[in-house]
Amino acid sequence: MISANQYQDIEIQQGADFENVITFETSHGMDAQKQFVGKIQKDFANSTFTGPKKVNNAYGTQANNDDWQENSTITEIQFDLVASVTGNSVTLTLPAEATQYFTDDFEGVWELVEKDVTVVANPIYTRHIQGDVVISKGMIQLDDTWKAAS
Image (cartoon, rainbow, N blue to C red; front, side, top):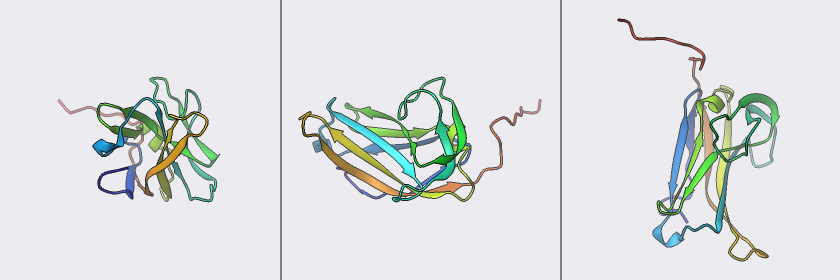
């Protein structure tokens, strides 16, 4: 479990990279038998909303050629995540290329769940942390360019 708090609200800034590091108690025992998924939804009823959708590569895995686009019929956004055995942590990220597609008024929920497959026939699922998500509006577009005056 998480050492300090099992409920955390997050704010995502439109058009900016997002990162959230979740650190576990040392007694948690991270190992290769633990798998994680972290995602954002509009609500727990799985309602549709307009937001970013990864259209190539594996969900939950960052790749240099990720392609994010706006889609009006999604029900979830999976964070890209990296689990660190030595750091006893999970890092959840979304690139600016994804966050730019959240609508100005988006409010939703998020959570991080672990699947422990130590016993393959009977895996153990643990919801470690959850909370609300709000979007901080932005006006700069990713394709805007500028340079310092000389």
